[in-house]
Length: 69
Image (tube, rainbow, N blue to C red; front, side, top):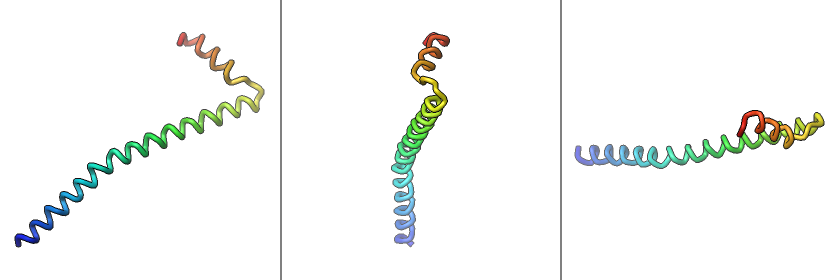
């Protein structure tokens, strides 16, 4: 009975340890995915503006003047 109880606690400790390390790892991976996705979207938007004949830098400067940033 004692060995079974000890093995159960060892399994619970292993699960807790996995959770402690997996949460930050998933956070880092998720944050990286968000940053890369935003970068890809911004790049595609800029390329679409260039294809349509707009200068994306000039449009950004005008937006900053309008919003006062």
